[in-house]
Image (cartoon, rainbow, N blue to C red; front, side, top):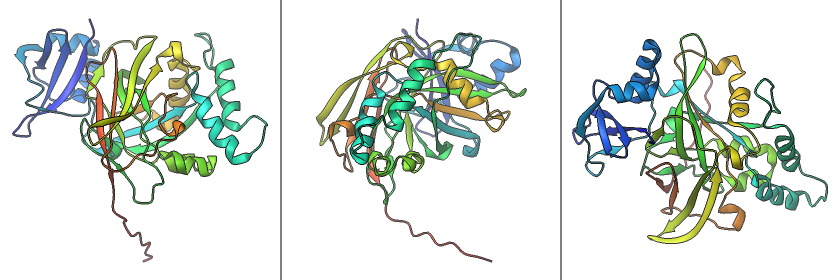
Length: 326
C-alpha cells in the first residue's frame, strides 16, 4: 500500500500532518509537520512510515476543507536548500542539444550531448562504485519553494517561465552529518529556458527561480517506472499536454549516484538542514515551441502520487536594485 504524508493548514491557520493511504487522509496525532515527525523517527531509531502509522488517528481530514501545503518545510527557510541535476533522463538531451546546436551552428557534439552520453555510459555504477558526476545546479533556499495552488512567480527580468515535471528527493541531515532520505515528491522545477538558450553558461541564472512541490511526501522507495502527464491550461483550456517518464528505468543515472554527487560536499551535510533535490526531466513544452504567459496553469500528475502539482504563473513587477556603500 502506498503511503504519503500531507502537511495542511486549517481555517484557523493551525497546522497539521496527515497520513494518506487507500482509506483516506488520517491525522497523525502529536505532530503538526513532517520535520518534527522525521526528527522523532531518527531519535527513536524507527522508520518514518512506521512512526506515522503508530500515531495514525481515527480522525480523517476532508482535503477540500483544508489548505494543503508543500510536504516539507523548515521554520528557518535558510536551512532548506533547493538543488537539482539535469540531463539525467533518457531523451533529456534531445531538446537541450537542439537548443545549443542551433546557437552554435556546429555539427560537433554539444557539451549537453557530451554530458548526457557520460551519464549513459557511467551514471549507473555498481553498488560499490562511484559513477560519473551529473550536471548540478542551485535553485535557492526554502523561500523559493511554493506549495499546491500557489503561484510560481517569474522575475520581471526573466525571458521565459517554463515548467519541468520531475521527481524530487526530500532529505534531512541527521545530527551525525549523514543524509537521510525522507521520501519523494512530485515537482515542477520552474526554469527560464530562453535565458539558458542564450548561452549555456547562463544555466545557473535560469535556475534561480521558484519551484513547486505537490502535497504528497511519498514514503518508501520510488517505483522504477514512473509515468505521468504534464499539461498547460490557458483560460481553463488545455493548450499543451504530453506524457512524461521518470524513475530509474527511464534515467541515465541512478538515484544513488545523483545523491552521492550532491552530498559528497561537506557544506550539504550540515546537521538539521533539509534538502529538496530535483532529479531532472526529459519533457518540456519549451522544446516544442510553446511560450507561456501570466495566468497559465501548470498541471503535473503521475502515479503512484494521488494528487497533482498544480500552479499558475505570476509575473513579478520590476524591483530596482541599488547597491550602497557605507
